[in-house]
Image (cartoon, rainbow, N blue to C red; front, side, top):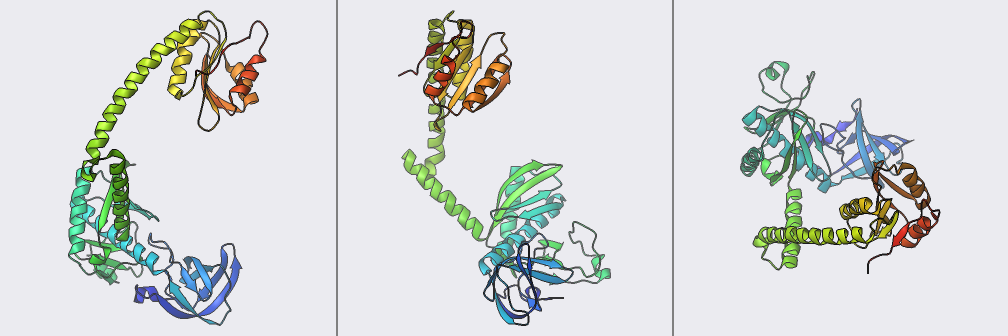
Length: 396
């Protein structure tokens, strides 16, 4: 059994211990100490990392009251070594975990929903609740949680007796037996938990609820706490500053400028669509009754390629193949034939031109990893009377 120093003092960053075992494993070396301040993965909280002797601790897990440290180098059995916790990581996880407790407690008290799962990621914390929350309700919860944090309430850890547990309204995802560790934020949350938490709620700093979306029979919420909130706000401010410069607008007027730009873009797209339709009708008229047609057009979107192919396939009375170069050097295409079956034709083309696509028997869209010359060379090989193609080069 390993002595768990992290339960005696969550803020202990350095300790000494004796190496009891060291053996090679799949994840490096597995080291067992007589005591440790490294927290193993558990209670939804990831493991600690840091330095042990001259080794880097990459993972920490607990198996039958024994804590295993996974390191990148071996340590001598019987040696006394110094361990140093990556405190920045530890404190960040304590902030996230403590904030999650208070958020879950407030939602349980206000709406009666249970926390049915959560994940503490490197960027955000996700919590699943078995009930629905609106965006407005999420904002109410966020304000109440932060008010509680600013009151700087003390966190209490206890091991109640079985009789006491019967009357304590604590949260737990499963039936518990034996010694139960209860983490309490008075008037905020009471939960059975083996994780590590800050001593006072004020150390969480701030909680920001980022999103709430319907998930299974309830919702999934994303949140961040502590320094992650500061990093998030700095990121938003940096982006807003860059956007305001690009738009030549004050930062507080960025949304208005973007809205105006979106409206202008909408009208421009409409104008371009009308011009394209006019041009496509003219091209369709040029190739009327031409039979099989190969067209190359610059700067078309996938949707525009489709529209041009549709406009011309009825006019040419044959197969109409439209190609437009993409930025990565490939060629996007749309191929159609009224009442035709192009499956064999397109399959062979994709094989020879390293392409892919799909659609209906009479109309297919996709792309080929070939330039115009290779595409044109391929179609020029179709020289028999039934399959020859009239070729229109790229518009200049």
